[in-house]
Image (tube, rainbow, N blue to C red; front, side, top):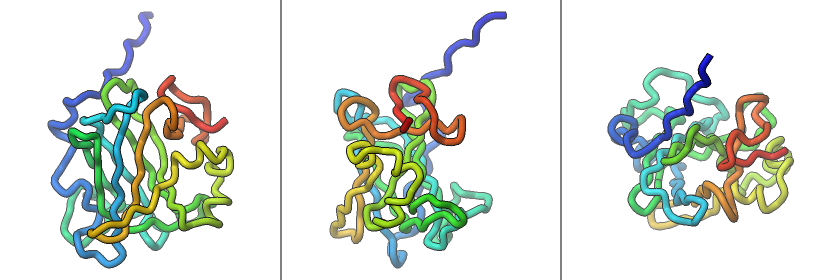
Length: 202
């Protein structure tokens, strides 16, 4: 038997069909309690990645993950818990959402799950965004508890409010100094890194 060929690298071609209008509007403008999350995606040399694609999945303020068809549909009132946003030429992204609550029936602290697609990746990457105001929950979170302070900081959003209201900054570093913690979800969520570009807690 012949060996399998490598996975196709993800490149700018995904911009033809995956982004959609309102992809970063998990809630409409003016929603009470809405926050913004924004940041920059950078490669191992610190250069901004202008054509990455990020997907965010989260619980609502009630701790439940919305389970309904049509997560891509934006009707101006429904919270779907899903965002898909591309980076711009400066490597920046932005979305508007509600603060997540701790998942019902889980020991995890409130967080957002993130999937990263970018040029040169044989497989997409997974990470999380945590929020610093959940001090006790973060201290008890099974994932954060396995990381030292420096690595834990790469998963923590930084308060960054502005004229648009409460906000947080969350940068993603693909490799190198300050590399974001990435997860291998193939076996119990925490395992050895699937590639040189990822790192997971031992």
